[in-house]
Length: 119
Image (cartoon, rainbow, N blue to C red; front, side):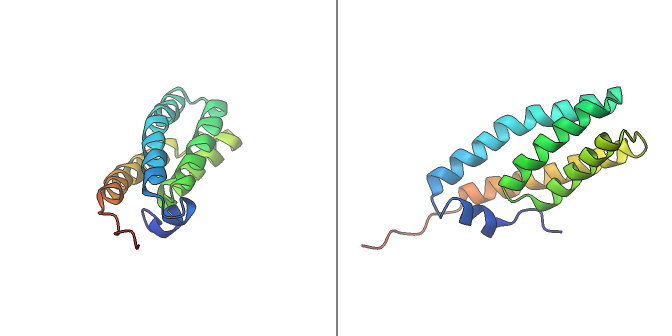
């Protein structure tokens, strides 16, 4: 599964680089806190908080086209919803790996030169 669906993200902002930058910055600002909430819920084996936080993170990841990370967050959300504590550590490790892979992809997208505007 691809780390970042660039076309999806660029389509969502209709090619507006300024909006793209704003969305990605907001994503980074909020997702770090949500990921911390997911980690804490896994540590405490708090299924309800895990379900809610993973759901929130999944939505944020999907909004930026992070398919693999969103799938990993979905797995944690499902575990929390079912109250299943088996496999939490592995699911969290997968999410963290995908998040780490996503960060440079988003940063690279932000640093791409913009196409010149036609007259």
